[in-house]
Amino acid sequence: MQFGNGWKPAVAPAAGLDVLRVGLGAALGLGVAAALVQLAQWGGWQGGWGLFAPLGATAVLVFAVHTGPLSQPWSCVVGNTVAALWALLVVAWVPAGWAPAVAVGGAIAGMQLTRSLHPPGGAVALLLVLEAQHGVRHGWSYAFVPIALLTLVLVLLAMAYHRVWGKHYPLQVAAPAAAKAQHLPADDLSDADLQALLARFDQDYNLTPQELGQLVRAAEEQAITRRFGSVTCGQVMTSALWTCRPGDDLGRLAAQFQQHPIKSLPVVDDAGRLLGVVARSALFDWLWQQQQGDTSDRRQRRTWRLWGKKPPARTPARAADLMQDAPLSVSDHTPVSHLLEALAVHTVPFVAVLRQGQLVGLITRTDVMRILLH
Image 1 (cartoon, rainbow, N blue to C red):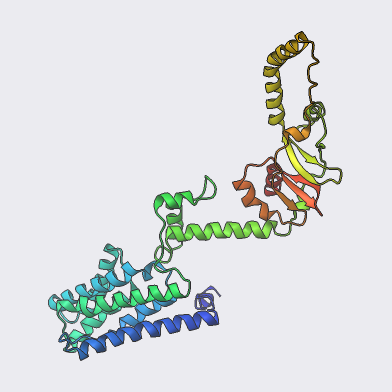
Image 2 (image 1 turned 180 degrees about the vertical axis):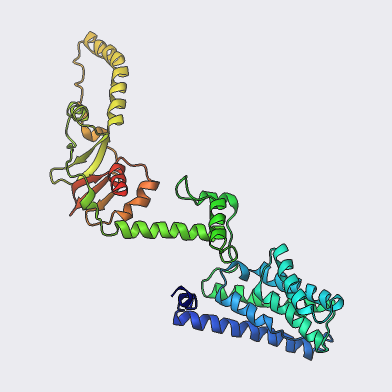
């Protein structure tokens, strides 16, 4: 059974538009390369060069699997060139019977040493050796014109073509500092961990650590969305509310803070609509300022009495005097997954849950952590 499964297609089915995009791109790229060769021949170029078969394999990579490491510009241009130079050296020094094997094996080693592994490079090496055995020998310049030149032309066309379709080519590898800044949690996988995973599953040449990291983070986000997509804020909110009104005096607020383990009080109107929030720290700050101002206030009152005037009456502070803008709010039907990013970015005491404009509950980080743990 396992043997049979190993022979099944490993490539995911392609969408109809992708089939058209890739086929059209490869045809366009090779068509421009052929036109360039024709123009050179009409111009009297004496190099005797033309299209070479492995360029078709390069077209497959740069247009169909342009995100792979083996399809990047360095791998394409340098890989084909290194393979050609090695093959020309083999043709000059290695007996014909051994030449094909030595050419391909050495080309692979050379591409690995130059970090330019490119599968068509092996075909380039084999092609030059076989042509030499059939009497077609090329000079050293052949590695640069046409091989390096036409490969470069194909790569440049692929870059422009993918940009037109909104694709990214070449692969933008993040700098180490930028890649580190993209990690979500502090204990995220390091580049060394990602590289070890690639080696473990023999994917070193198919993905970069940065690509694997992006896939891991995307998978985590998808898992969170699926896990919490069916859980609404109304299901996890705390519906036991301690609130205050804008006209409540500060003594009432202080009593609520003393009786309940809360750090802030929502301020609502008579209809239950959320107006703002009073933080415990704001109340403490006000009390401290009042204590510091009592001495000067007494002096001013004595001055008023000395002149035979009645001191102005103090206006008692109310909740509205300490109220700050309301924090984040959501509907009770909002999925909990929509809150995760907001709670990670914003420092808020709670998220207010509203139903038809009325405050019906609160969600704190503790509520979200409880869901994660369960």
